[in-house]
Length: 244
Image 1 (cartoon, rainbow, N blue to C red):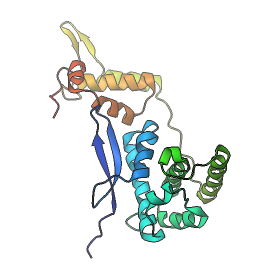
Image 2: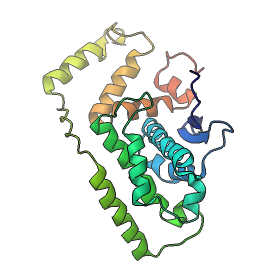
Image 3: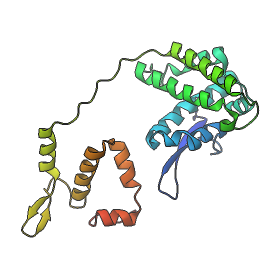
Image 4: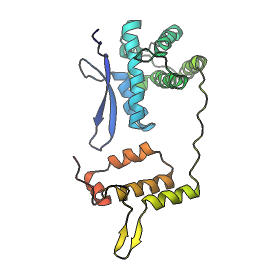
């Protein structure tokens, strides 16, 4: 059996600033879908990492596909005309989300996360100043419609168990890591342990100390490091290979 290609695809665009910006496009034309692109560019990109945004857009790709193949309408046109999915439409959409693309059921955590992304997108798109198009709602109407979506999605969530809290490193752990990767003063200057390749030793130590002091996640730190211009990387890591 020949696999049918997905009608929507997530592409990563690299901006001049070095930022990676995922975009949801039609697979046949590579044209971005309108409302999801506005949501990603004007709103969501400032609240999540690019990898999380890409996953969010993959969820919305399933919403666009459901609208096209099951509901029988173009989701962009539907939303910009001021129409909503409605209770029955959302229930139909949710039934398609319960299985992954390979036919296996989503675990409860992933399912609830999918619902959270869709809820955020639909609440955002209620405002015509966000999505574009017709049907301007008053502040009272907008609040009421968002309240309805909040209640509906709350009733649809499975309620996954909360994840276990990751405990911070103890002092003895921090000292062990510093001893393993940190610099040491030698008569001729400063040297690093041989645990990593020469061009990565300074980088790894700096990334550990920055993450420890600022409390940022590994993905955020890696994204910031790879987003540096090549000249900045060479200034920070003089032994690193040239970009490309």
